[in-house]
View 1: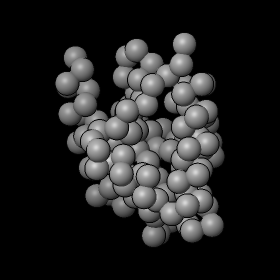
View 2: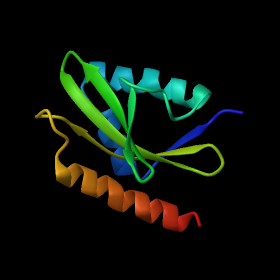
View 3: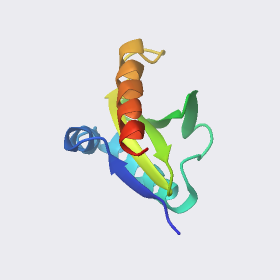
Length: 110
């Protein structure tokens, strides 16, 4: 049985689809793997952030992007937030957005 991927909102889905070409292509390749194998692809593709929050790590010719996601019961993966990195560290504000959205999604599904 495959996993399913959903999005926090249509806006999040559009942000991901509007990533630069090589980053969007990498997203498609990695999410196809996630559908078949599950959310934990291991480094360098995915990394746990703790508390049930994970990041999908995208690297392409145009730079580096991150997509935060969480998992729910029933083999469901929810994409919460995406951004293009401009520095080595993940900005605290980006993580806060993802954590708030994760809490909201998990509260809806309990």
